[in-house]
Image (cartoon, rainbow, N blue to C red; front, side, top):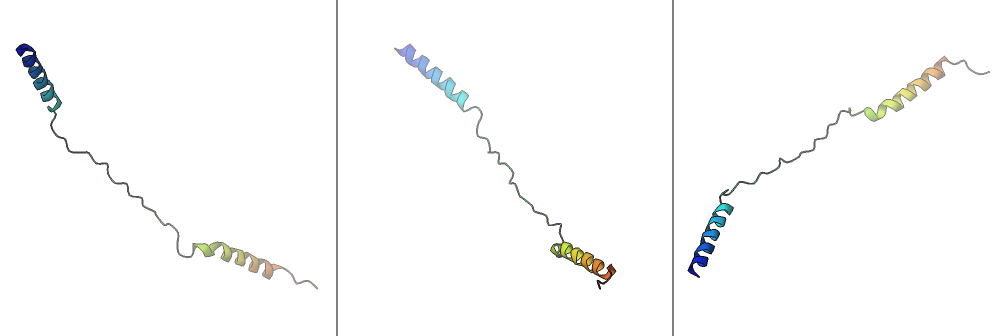
Length: 68
């Protein structure tokens, strides 16, 4: 009985030291992802198409001959 108790104690002592051999390790944190939006448009970008359309209408109206 003493031998089995001694053997059990030795086995438990060896396995517990193996389990704690690594020590503590600091957790590795993933870097935070930051989304960045870019605004490459100017403040009057919504006016470009209507102004071009108005320019084309004025050019067509000034170059056409009046109807009699």
